[in-house]
Image (cartoon, rainbow, N blue to C red; front, side):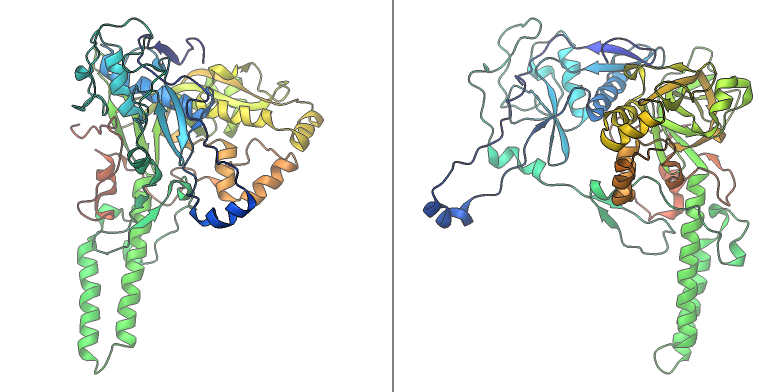
Length: 513
């Protein structure tokens, strides 16, 4: 993104203390060649290669996502009217760059080479200091400047001037310290939903094992007394207590270990726990909660938010949403797009005129062949630089393919793919939202790698290939619940008491409303 667009205002940080000099700043280590005789004696002593710092391309989707997140953080902190105008898109200062190491992202460029920023929140604090008039590192609140051993800046600096050590004599990182935190992959803890009265084992997953919300539609409950009830209407503790009491009575009545009666009680307990899980899933699916509220407008009719939990998924500004058929009053192009339309989320807000509803505003897009022959009437093509991140990622991947995929596109007469805008400035309620949009090449390999590779090789790139694999929100057997105070309020008794959710610092739930 090189200029302001309809969706973002570009923020450039002119002052910099960045020391990353570009490609080669983190060179790959070379292992000296050894003679045959020596190789045999030292093979077992060669240490395992350390994880490498891989410099990301400037247009890498992950790099773009960091700039968007930095914009969210800086606008909230620095803008006098954070809820007005376009979202911010923050360019990295000169001498700072995003890298990948050990499947994690790191910002390199801090004057002490070994010190890396690992989250947008950490880096944003340093950017706030760079945007200030202070030249004293003690005034910076970031994780690296708030250390007593860090030398102070001796004099004021101009634009893009290194502040600490010279680049000819960089401070060497201590391998024993710099690689320890990045080489350890912290797993994610997943808590099964059901009811807090039932002890369930916490599942541990790495990032590679995480999946979008892909379960089939929730099946109906098995126990007759639970039908036509919502999760919060069921006296779960009482029911589990009854099952436990029946099991204890059966065990006491038996001369030996319980057989029939005890097994029946255990079976009923398992069935009750399973139904609790189903009803908890339905409760989540038919609920939403909002986070990180921005200031209200002067009239007080609308409140904007940076994000929300929409059913089982998290959605924030800049994400894209799969849509159901758009209403005809939005125009012929929107109506013709049908279920192929995707919304780029530019705003998430509530309105006093529609209490309890969450509304999404943005542009509606449709993926078409580049020649536009299958585009809806009146739909305008959109340049990739003006697309939301996920859509730019999708079309960039499709048009980078060669071989049979390119041949299939040529045979179809399209010569590639592009996104067209079927309607700008759309405002939609949650009844039109199916769920999040995921770029095909990021979603499909984790579902079925072999089928995905075969489809790519054969050029079978249906624009709707992922739809069959994704849930559609609120299409189960539940009833609409609507807004909850927070994510934990939505989960309620479906997770153990004292359960806490791991979220970034900028996610502030609106628990006071």
